[in-house]
Image (cartoon, rainbow, N blue to C red; front, side, top):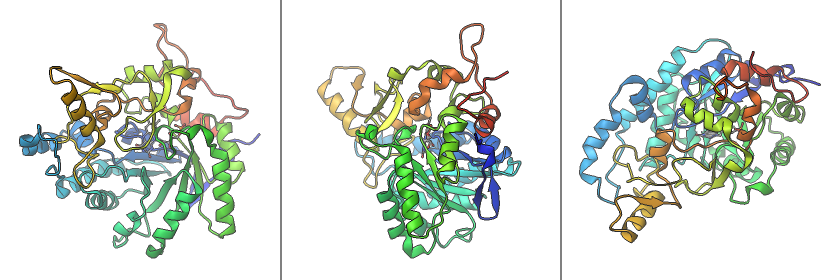
Amino acid sequence: MKRVDDFRLRLGSKELVPIMVGGMGVDISTAELSLEAARLGGIGHISDAMVPTVSDRRFNTKYVKNKLQQYKFNVANPDKSVVQFDLGLLAEATALHVGKTMEAKRGDGLVFINCMEKLTMNGPKETLRVRLQAAMDAGIDGITLAAGLHLGSFALIQDHPRFNDVKLGIIVSSLRALQLFLKKNGRTGRLPDYVVVEGPLAGGHLGFGMDWAKYDLATIVAEIRDWLHAEQLDIPLIPAGGIFTGSDAVRFLEMGAGAVQVATRFTVTQECGLPEDVQQEYFKAGEDDIEVNQISPTGYPMRMLKNSPAIGDGIRPNCEAYGYLLDASGNCQYIDAYNREVAAHPEARKVKVWDKTCLCTHMRNFECWTCGQYTYRLKDTTRRNEDGTYRVLSAEHVFHDYQFSTDDRIALPD
Ligand SMILES: Cc1cc2nc3c(=O)[nH]c(=O)nc-3n(C[C@H](O)[C@H](O)[C@H](O)COP(=O)(O)O)c2cc1C
């Protein structure tokens, strides 16, 4: 049987190991994780989710504190429309995050940034343009447009000097979404360099409804592959979601995929941003401990561990400090849900909110344990320590296991 290493992904003049580590916000796919993927000849992703917040934690900047200071007067106001991001500071934070990562890059691979359209930041177009341009200015190798349709995103950067040199990819979950994108994007005269096809078993937000279980990644990939072929469009497809072993990856590469995108197996590596106690929760999880729910204020279903502290937590909305999910009119579904519960329980010191969560706060604090469907198999990928905990792996070990394994085997650490 073939192994992943028998294949290569061609992107322009580059030949890469066809393994892409997917973006995991907020700083779960860290610079360190993406740099390991690049060092090993593949592609890694950093994430552009909540970059000012991430920058504060990593580089001791004070973006969050200063923004909260500026808008403190508005904390008790349910109308958040005044809470705006300073675009100059947003560019500065992105430049810091991306620039420091790219400075540290070694090896033949690439580092991309995962950019979510649903991070509307009370100014969808303006903030997205700044984030994309600042990442390009700071030397990012590529941008994967995620979570949202991104119908106008290429146009936002088409005047940038790097527009034709930076690798640009989109994530879709159906042929229809891809067709729509290509139609609307036609005016820019630029095709995506790759298309990630994300199936229903992925982590993070899903591009499906609550009927996600009816869909199957291989079927969607075959449909998109055949359509691209008929249209004579040569764009590498990169399937994602539930590709757990090297052999799973080989099956997609043999059906014509250019590479695979994987994430869940890297959540339990030292380079991943999740704290180790959270990684142990991922290892311990059984199949019944994982659910797809609708608590994300983005409106997309999201997969997570059922014991995530974010579920049911009724924290006061933190938009003055964060505010990454505020839409163009300063609304967020969590604010409405929270205010409804406060009004219904005026005497309560703290309310419970079950239908939505304050995703900014909980992703920032690693309390929303989003994960792929096969998280329950992570315990089979490592050994146990004497105290019963599971041994956290190195990203290199997991990457090489994907690259070299055959016959559905998973290599355990030495
Ligand atoms: C913890 C976690 C966080 C994720 N966050 C994001 C994200 O911020 N943006 C995104 O486009 N995809 C996100 N994803 C999806 C992954 O990038 C990837 O496409 C998918 O999980 C691959 O499937 P797998 O996890 O079964 O390997 C996330 C996945 C996980 C496991």
